[in-house]
Amino acid sequence: QVQLVESGGGSVPAGGSLRLSCAVSGYNYSTYLMSWFRQAPGKEREGVAGIYTGVGSLYYSDSVLGRFTISRDNAKNTLYLQMNSLKPEDTAMYYCATKDRCCGWWNVDGQYDNWGQGTQVTVSS
Image 1 (cartoon, rainbow, N blue to C red):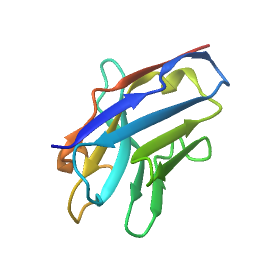
Image 2: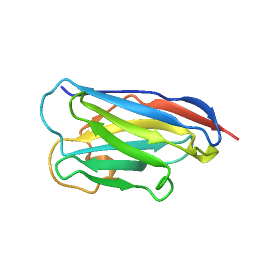
Image 3: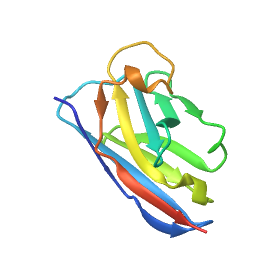
């Protein structure tokens, strides 16, 4: 059974940076898609960034493009999200998710097979 454990969240002032990590364990195979989602209070969960592991394609939501970077360390089975120039509107619970098999568009949350428990990011103005 695949387990995802996020870490790296915290409270930062606007303009600050954080790096989230998602450690993947429990099953030794290559996933198809790995992504970060976030959910703010009272709002729907939204896709932040995704990576198709086979071809290495990266995708970002318009709201984070140019500020966030998704990456993966295969040797460590870890997914990262580097977040720079943080804004108060980035405040949310951040989740990593993986999809085992092809195919699908990265920001459709209902298709993912595995989810982490989330890590809170709070950005103060």
